Image (tube, rainbow, N blue to C red; front, top):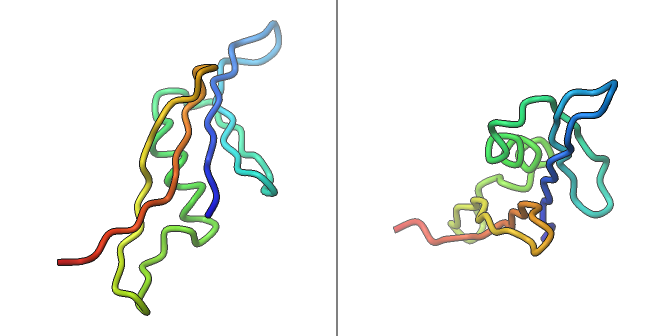
Amino acid sequence: MKAIQVKYLACTMTLPARLKVWAEGNKPVITSDTDNPDVHATAYASSRGWLMYNFNEDRHRSLTKGQLPNGDLVYVITESNNI
């Protein structure tokens, strides 16, 4: 499983504030919408098929959020049984 990292990039003289969303071995996505990091992390994972329902084991996948010491947000994929 991959961890998704979301980094806030402050504005510069030529660019507005933005978010960088990436996972190791995958191309990063940069968005100017800085208000919704959860939405962007979910969209990033969904677009790669990482949140698809696991029919073989009847398990639901979702993202769990945490924060790194440098302030970046990190999301990991967790699975739970459907009850």
